[in-house]
Length: 380
Image 1 (tube, rainbow, N blue to C red):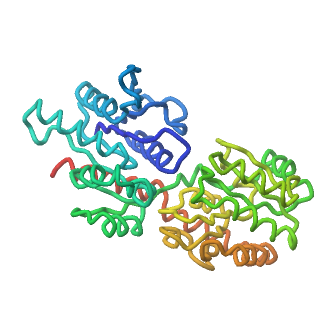
Image 2 (cartoon, rainbow, N blue to C red):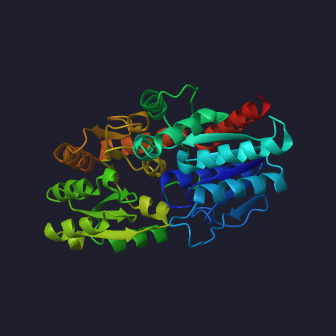
Image 3 (cartoon, rainbow, N blue to C red):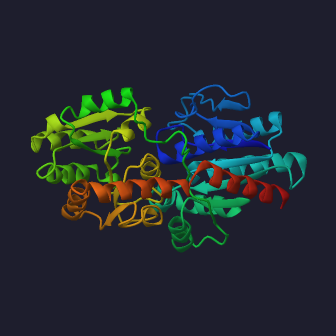
């Protein structure tokens, strides 16, 4: 098939999933066309059946704000026409579903053929639970989702939440996020061991958190959890990512006088290497529709301590692959971490369970679900 994919080309979960999906589909022989304002961060090396199309934005004095939705729709029309795409896949509903709807209607009006192009939308999380609830977005987004030829969500929680909050009169198919289990696999070589000595010279345990440092990720809780853990277990903390809460987090680390034990790594591509030297992944989020970074950690055999929100309980199984606690319960999460790090036998079991659980969400199992979904939509 010839598939157009639109996503945010950033380090956020929706962009990562969309990019990895495109790459996986390309490996399976499909022709993939990414349509966005920048090259997706995880697109990586060259593949002869992956193409990137930049959405050009023109500056005009009359327009105070960039008209990205319209420019994106026009680019979707152009790419579909020229490359004869079979389907458009809009990841993260705002504004991509609206642009895809416009593109489809423009193409249909030209051909007078209702079968000219199909578009599907994948709901990822905050497009539904946060930004989509804004009065300025809600009617347009609800309309665009309902007019899509097919809709998927990354967890049952998100599908149910969408139906309840927006009263969407449409079936939403649950297709979970996935991970490349061959790429995200714990490394144990000389280079990795040297890497660990740099972070933990005295063989301290390592806690890790990866996010975009937004308020709903509660990164300050990660720091508070670690501050309690280090009082009982020699350990270090690695924080990967960047975003609006980073400065506040750095201030908290200084106030707690633990700056020598905490590493702010910023945005990183070496996730496998960082996860391979880590012992526990901390995800105390206030909202999490799936938890892709937790899945990647589990694939590397890292048990997860998370909050009980959203789709996390569908992924992280309490007392099997890690532990689940209520939002903001820093004391309990810290206790779980200390107990696990102090029990090598239990840790080994949970580490193996985490890896085995990640295999349930492997690329090989999930990507065919998208292929079948596309085929069904195109044939409908």
